Structure formats: C-alpha cells, structure tokens
Image 1 (cartoon, rainbow, N blue to C red):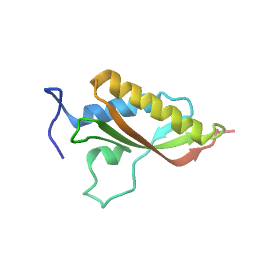
Image 2: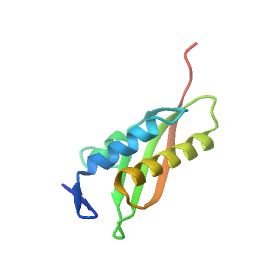
Image 3: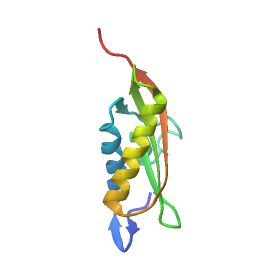
Length: 115
C-alpha cells in the first residue's frame, strides 16, 4: 500500500482519506455501521478494505471511494445509499479540494431494531 498520497503538493496518508469517508458515512441517518469487506484473500486485503472503506486517487487526481455499510431497517436502501454518496462526496471535496469521481456504496446487511 502507498505510504503517502500527494494531493496538490501535500502529502496525505491513505488512512486519512478513508477516515474522512468513514466518519461522513457513519453520520448519515439510516447507516447502522461500516462493515468489513469480504472481498480478497486473508492477509492480502488492503487495510481500508478490512474496515469496509477504500479511497483511491486516480491518475487525474480525482478521488474514488468504495464503502460497505449495514443499513437500519425502515429506511429505503436507495435513499440511504444516495445520502451516503452525497455525504462522502461533500466531505472529501471539502477536506481535500480534489474532485470526487465516484462513491460506490454496497449495502451488505440490514440491522433490525431491538424490540
């Protein structure tokens, strides 16, 4: 994994971008949790993927994020995913000034309220 990402001449650790994406997604109403991605081989999964968040920088400098979430039962999944896309896009753009090319949201589960 890259030790440092350069954004407009400033070095940023990859985990910083993933943390920004994670915190902004967790703040969305209807998101129960960020869940670990099951893709990849044990021991070969990048650190961000193990947390369920990956943020990459393209050759053109645009950011691409991928998040795996569990949603709360009762909210439309499309609405939750769209709200996560907006929140992550806004947070990454605000904190880095970089264009956000894509935010992919995977709903890996639904959490039911305790009765």
